[in-house]
Length: 453
Image (cartoon, rainbow, N blue to C red; front, side, top):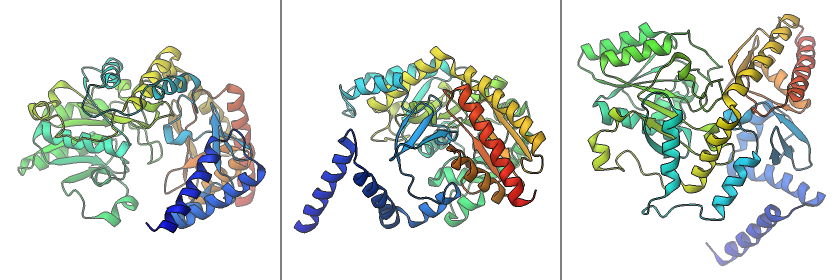
């Protein structure tokens, strides 16, 4: 770094910190931030990102600046109703005041840990998680992002079983790190990175017989399978709900062949689908379960795994870091958020709230499907993980654009809008839901006219 660059960087950092710390910004400052944001994304983040976001709005000037409960706001105070929920992050709402209070108190004490002394919040959180998860799930390992949690689950399955192969499903999404994307079931995410982890077979989602055949064939030719990894509901694939009994059948198959069952509850867990964990619907206890997204209360990033005692083999006890050693995994600030989130969810029965409000939205969608059958081809969901199905992606994109014009945020999957997700916070008021359904009604009418459907 040259002296001139250092001076420029310091001046720029001071200007940005001033924006953050100021209680109010002038109009000129807001205009500058908008311009800076567009320039910075194009020059220093990814020039394709702003173009991609045009699926929602052609106006790149919408710069997110603050949020609260049901809404987020741009720099100029325009409020948007959040029916996307950060793909499942905001189950407890934006900046939930009760959770935020806990995190602020912890921040005033200490934020990160020494890495060597015992940090009590990690232990408390692990104990609470064992209390609210199915069956005998007991031992926890905390990470920072969803893909990292999946990596730990995959490694643990190998350590515990001695197997090397994995069975995943077509359409699956487990993240984009190398191990996680190897499990993924969408070619668009995988094809640029092949070859990746080679010992993975993908079978049809919801087809337990196909899964058993794959495991049996591998073992017949001398290949040992470490784990089966499934989402109890496929989220990124378009809220695909398997037939009832599928999870129970997978559990039986894993027991029969000595294979670890990994349930990816990163999106479906923490109340989102109407029960604290989706696998509870079939009274199934996986060997390893991943969690994340809403786990940090919409305030702090924290993810991880919880496993049955049989998975926690001697190797892990002899060398606690053989599984992984994320510097920030299970840090006190993130743990305080997760602990407060669990308290809030239990105190307010958030899983039930998700179920009841989800049923209310689904009832509204039923009426809209009757009214616009050529536009809204279908809908499905569990709790507040809901999706709408359209004839083609362009129709779905147009619906999301129209809703955005009504100040309602929804989104398709990462690469397609033939299915559009509705994933709002559980704190969404019924009056707000009614407004969203009315906006959707008007959007569907506009799209029907535009596409001559």
